[in-house]
Length: 273
Image (tube, rainbow, N blue to C red; front, side):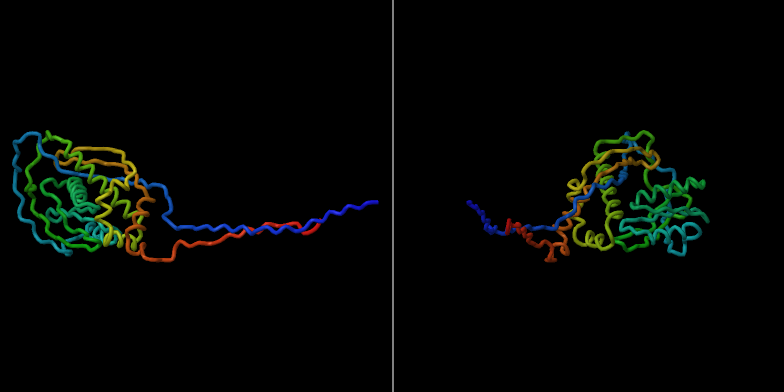
């Protein structure tokens, strides 16, 4: 009787080594949507100007002690408002006053003037009282306290909105949306880096960060002689973060990010049967 034996010898298999390199980069994020408003002055359609009925008196110096009642409270809110771009407007008529604050000086003055009209004061106007310069509040404190009209020429009812006016308003609306994005999405440290290092560079190429914009509304204020455009802008968060990583001093320093690691796969082998 013949006996057949089959002997299986272990066959050594070479270990398979796979090297993978992972680079840490900006995280792709959804684009963020913010609104922006741009207001610019418009000229009368006719070259003939209407003089104002009465010239305004020289504004009087008004320190913080001049603020009373609600405006004193509003100024405390204004100081606590976490924004690098903010303005406070004030209007005084006798013992009554109105005030408002916003990201832009013109917006603050317009809102303040509306409040003056709301309390029945039509013969005086608001002026910029305080503004923030890179987070530091500067008190201007020159307010017209007389019952007079503005020194500006009274705008005619028939106004003309030219293409140049619309272009300027759009540019300001985009910048307003960008400033809102900075305020809402950047932390304190990132805002400081933006102000100190990157502001001018990023503003100069603002359109690279704006994915798109949609005009929401536009209107003319005949009394103030202004044209306002409101837009909804979509800003590419990932592109902004990538710019920060590529250009800010802190991000471009050697931080040890990005390292290689090895994955070893050892194939099993048959030892007996």
